[in-house]
Amino acid sequence: MTNKTPDEVLQLCTAHVWHQRTRPFKHPLNYKVFCLRLRIDQPEALARHNSWLFGINKRRLVSFMNADHGARDGSDLNVWLAETLKRAGLEHPGGAVWLQTFARMLGYVFNPVSFWYLYDPQGQLRVIVAAVNNTFGQKHEYVLTADGAPIESGQTLDCRKVFHVSPFCPVTGHYVFERVVTDCGQGGSERMTIDYFDGSDTDEPLIRTGIAVKPQPFSTAALFKQFMRMPWMTMAVIVRIHWHALKLWRRGAKFYRLPDLPKDSVTTNQEPSR
Image 1 (cartoon, one colour):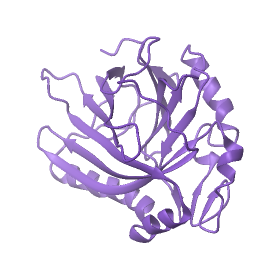
Image 2 (cartoon, one colour):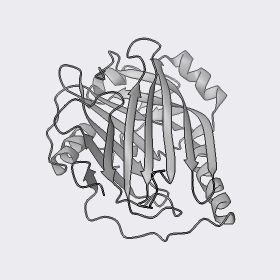
Image 3 (tube, one colour):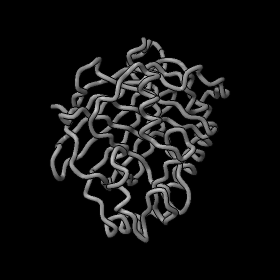
Image 4 (tube, rainbow, N blue to C red):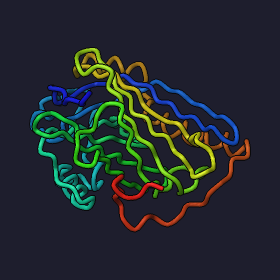
């Protein structure tokens, strides 16, 4: 099934995140969260959703800020995206651009990974950009394509790992990305998984991680309900990362020092992954 772009410009997604280390011991975690999906190529339409609770590039209890994404300087995200695609040797597919990400809440946000979904004019998904951040203030973009064809639901995309994320994982091996859409219509759900294979002599990934989302139309009332359920969600993301890192360290997980950044800030899955 080909992924078709939705019709709205802003969606609110209830979601849950999971992360499981499989070796040398099992260490799972699962959390309920919520996130936004925004039609980045329609900034004027997005701005119409500004309210007392939510703001696009405005300080609110919940907000979306250009400065949290792209070049991190508040500049036009569509310009940054075009430059990122150019560095990956790609052209913009010419259709909708959706960004799935955590909102800034109570003035704070940390996104371990945000997903950019780029469609062609016929509504077919052509490019996925996984924008990864680590807790050291560094970032990297993994640009994924299906070698010129539409990216189908359930299709796996391999990409070489080049960026340091966790001090308990080496910068070796490759990722396997998979996006599964169970229903493109109202009430559907989607799942993005990222399995990390560290190059060991085993078919089992070292890390299994993913986010499952259930999009719904955005409204101030729906957002307020989610905010009241978990007002400290974005702060909890960074707290949980460090709390589980402490647990891994105490259990004896191998520690890797922060390496130099890769020479290029963009990696494409059209490069060799192993």
